[in-house]
Image (tube, rainbow, N blue to C red; front, side, top):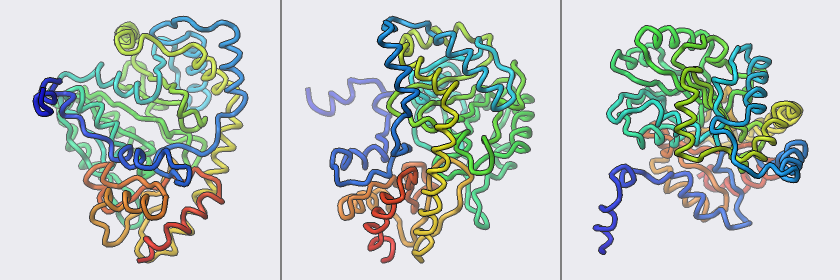
Length: 390
């Protein structure tokens, strides 16, 4: 079978998928030990021993079998307690579905909500997998831009509300935002929530960076202001603030009426999340607060160093992020960020994410994850200096 015929033999959904431009750059250098990898949203530090030991103990105790589709009840209760203590939310275990990663939570949510042709409004720049999950399930995407205004990342709330028409099925809001660090205020969230109640629009809140907030213990969350019956799904993950990217563990919070249906969708996707990984999640929620505090202190140092270094280059313009752990910076004269990231990797052995990966609004930008030790960041900027100072 010829290559073209082979390509056409698969589903139109699979054919339409676009490769991640972040992953494309990473694949060029992730097996080279000389490369400084600043491309992914991943801290340099290992998962803390308390969490690792909980997983090991669970394995040794024989926790090797299938788990409930919606997750182990002990973890679901722990998520409810964590959410109440942190956000003041009053969710119950029937609202919680454990997922093998935040990404799986997103695709599960998209499968749950989207009928092909549904109108979904999303913010950009945005992590490409968020919009990709909804595109893959057949959504028609309408983008509203987060823009740079007077040294701040801002969302035009009027523009967003205008896009949320009565024929809109879903609005997807990632706050704090990857890659910009923009964060939606409580006031803005209340306005959006009331608007969506009026029109019957689902809110999908990507809350993965809620704890990585630079202006308080947590970023504003729809879970703090929503009622149990609201059309709200919060997607979260253990990956970022507990340094558990490789564990693949997340959760979603949704109206309790859909517990069984989300369990069915989980059955046909992954069946369940591994029991020993869920045991690690329980330890993270119950005993991992010090780990979050430690990570925040480390990335604060990383940000200050990164900001100081970037400010020395006249070609570079960046805006202080409110949350997450990225600097999304514009380079004067840069018109092809993917090619630039590829050349930077080849010439300097520093891995950066191309801005265009996050949507058309990201062209001309590069993203750097500063969740790294100071000596690593210093070496990275030493290598980057010839490119950024041209």
